[in-house]
Image (cartoon, rainbow, N blue to C red):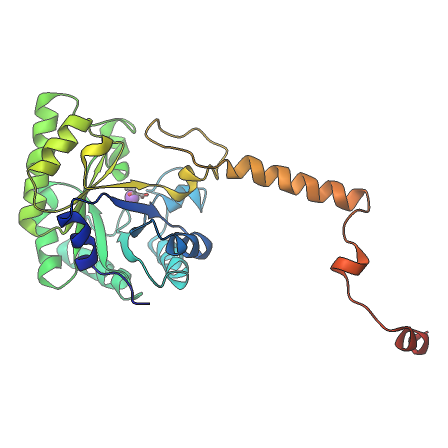
Length: 278
Ligand code: KIV
Ligand code: NA
């Protein structure tokens, strides 16, 4: 089976077929995401800093640790189109630093696009990457790497002027050559308006159903963490609680001698060999 390309994603977009995206944070989540026929695309989100690595924000993960995580995800992926985040600290200081970081990410192989948080101010840098043959996905609205200046993780564009800025940022990113744009926590009417006025797919999270696609964080969707999630998350499983319950069953079995069972879970030696051993 061949790996999906941007062309495949654009086929869905042009057919107005909603694009389903899920993040992945390690080999196992990558392999699970890759196996779902109903998932169109995988995002190696830097949210993995918090979900897989336990940092308090995406600001804390060292670049090399993020690269190791990307590599482990990609060992599990054969089929899907993959976007990888550019983590905090890898894009801000200069065009050169940004290019160098993007090259390191793309060099992992089988990754189809890098995603950069930021609007108009990032457009020239994004244009450079596109000219170098590195497809860029934009990310506007709530930008978790900027939570300090945003005053927390808050919905963006709830006032006319803020919404207008997000729209102008989207146009600037499209102009700079972004192939897709992630919108995060923007009122659904604004996300829909932006989507209808762009010629590139929008992928929404907390943006309602008017975007070209949806993305959720793997660990959120499966309830893998014992933590509250945003109202925009739909939990399809309660993995954390189910996993704790399973471990409790295992521990109980061990303590009551119900596990292991020699016949089922053990290895046999013949009577002859055993006599000789004795
Ligand atoms: O890091 C991430 O998971 C993301 C998505 C939520 C868009 O950037
Ligand atoms: Na991210």
